[in-house]
Amino acid sequence: MADLANRYPQNVTGKFYVDNNCIDCDLCRETAPNNFTRFEDSGYSYVYKQPESPEEEAACKEAMEGCPVEAIGNNGA
Image (cartoon, rainbow, N blue to C red; front, side):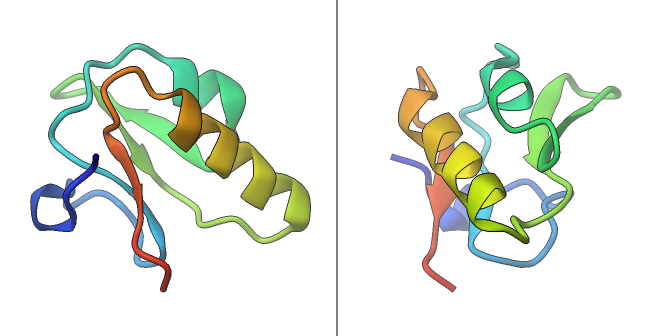
């Protein structure tokens, strides 16, 4: 389970975030490309835009549920 205390600083403010368990597998970027991107310098994903539609919300939830290392969190904000 993702830990808010270990979230990457690149994540934009909001309920979804990626923490330091990310293994750069690309699943979230493929599942929710409107919301996740890659931090090239260190090789991990982060949330660059919080969902703004029901479709984006669903895609972010799907990415969170599919993350193989549970690096995506939802703090419910």
